[in-house]
Length: 142
Image 1 (tube, rainbow, N blue to C red):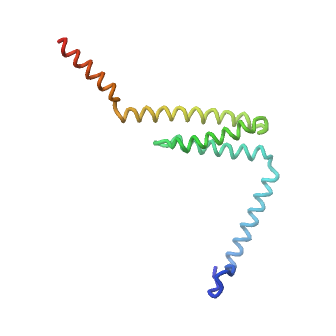
Image 2: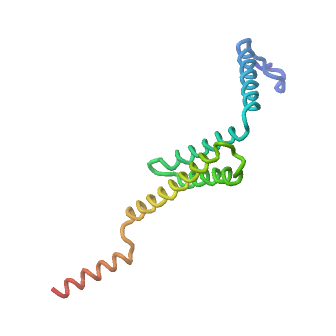
Image 3: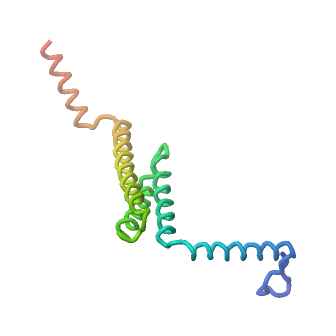
C-alpha cells in the first residue's frame, strides 16, 4: 500500500494482492450477513447469551477469580434471559439453566475468596484477645 507524498488526504493505493484480499473480505462479510438474515433471531441471541455465560465462567475459574468482571457478565446474562423471557425460543430453558449455574458459581467463588482472604489475614484482633484471655485464665488456674 502506498500513499502519495504530496496529498496527505488522498486515499491509499492498494496493491493487486491487497485489492483481492479486500474483495474477499467484502464477499465473506456479505455471506455472514446473509447467514444472519436466514437464522432465527432467537437462535442468534441464544448463541450470544451462551458466549456471555462462557465469559462469566472464564473470569470465575481463574486461580484468582475476577469477581467484578464475572458479576458484570452474570448480570448481562440475567438481563437477556429474564428480560426476554418467553421470547427466546427453544433455547430458553438452556439459557435459564446457564444463568442459574452462573449465579451459583459466582456465589460459591465469592464465598471461597472471602474465606481465603480471611485466612490470609489471620484471626481478627477480637479473636486474638479472646485467645489470650482464655490462655491466661488457664495458666492462672494451674
